[in-house]
Length: 67
Image (cartoon, rainbow, N blue to C red; front, side, top):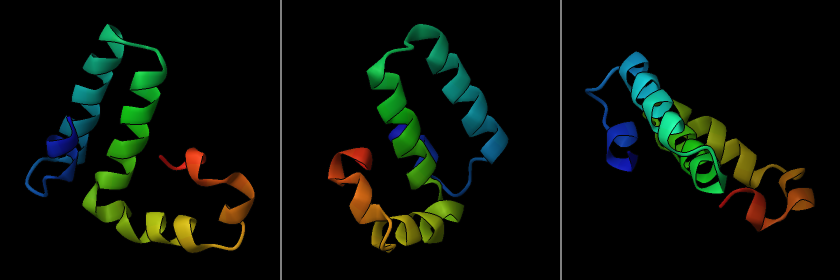
């Protein structure tokens, strides 16, 4: 799943469809972590994730929020 979401040639709609299929198999913490990783791995979200990590408000949440 991680390789799929970091791919630039696969459409966002296809990625979301595959993630929904994965959600049918597992709805626990593992899926939540995978979903967050996928969001950050999508090439169009790189700037947004950079801003989250280095925003002053991010220090309030702690590192575990982002891993």
